[in-house]
Length: 128
Image (cartoon, rainbow, N blue to C red; front, top):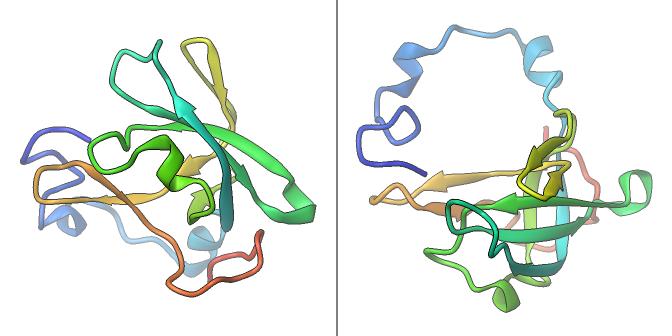
C-alpha cells in the first residue's frame, strides 16, 4: 500500500464513497481460497509475491501478485486461507498475469495484512 493519508488508510474513507445497494455489493464475488504456492516476484517494480490460490472445484487454482513482503515470507503463507475477489478481469503485471485480487487491510504504516477466515472453511466459499 502507500503512505499515510492514502485513500485506503484514511479513517474517513466511507465519507468519500457513494452508497451502494445490496445488489451492487453482490456483484463483487469474494471467495475464500488456500494459498498453495508462493514465490518472490523479483521482476516487480514494487516488492511483491506471486501467489497461487486454490479456490475449490468450481474455480480451480488462480494466480495473483500481492505486495505483502512487509509482513509475509513466501514460504510462510502456503497453507493460509485468504479472501479474494474473483470476478475482476485478468490484469497483466509485468510478465505475470494476475487473475484475482487477494484482499487485505492496511496496518498503521499502510502495509498489507491479508484477511481470511479464523477457522478453516471449504475453498471456494462465497462471502456473504
